[in-house]
Image 1 (tube, rainbow over the protein chains, first blue to last red):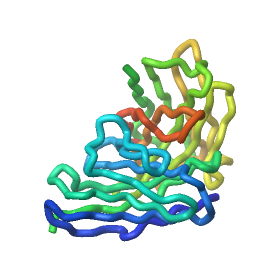
Image 2 (cartoon, one colour; image 1 turned 90 degrees about the vertical axis):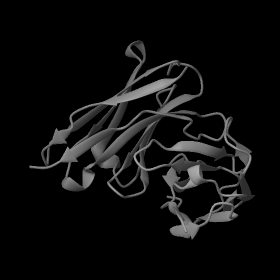
Image 3 (cartoon, chains in turn green, orange; image 1 turned 90 degrees about the horizontal axis):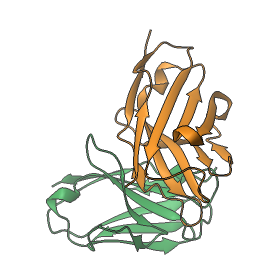
Image 4 (cartoon, rainbow over the protein chains, first blue to last red; image 1 turned 180 degrees about the vertical axis):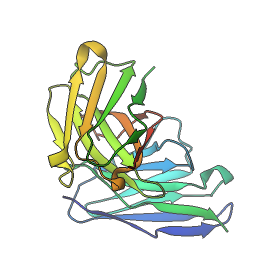
Length: 107
Length: 121
């Protein structure tokens, strides 16, 4: 299996901060990396697919980058509605895997 | 518009078999490239991918659960069924089904609301 490791597991940030979350794959996955946002008690929602393509309707303050084994999700200016848990997911292998999640909390 | 909804028992006893049904609309699982997957989330834990079935009946399973899972589709009913045998308390989780497309980045773009399953004697 391809293991996905996210860091940090949690972070505290203030509204307006720039936030970066990292996801590392245990082997190269090209750009087959997707990011999801999950708010408490809600269903996960895809933000970015293919490492850097913004899903329709997702604000442009979200961006993704990376290839191979290292990827980042960046929120350029954190908004109140962005406090949530973020997950990466690789789709390079037929056996899909999610990262452990990064919880973004209010500072 | 695409919608999915999970259904199944809310309470299951250890060692029993758990059948979960995903009923969807807005797409056909016989359409080339379409897939439906199952993902679960134990309370306070991360998302865990379980299984996925594609339009051509190709099936994929999480290696750690493969021996206990079976995924099938009923094209005429617009349903995908996941069966988990020999459940344990650690299988207590919210179970989601989600739509994906094989040709592309295979991300889950539409999700059901999830169904909470408690395993307890």
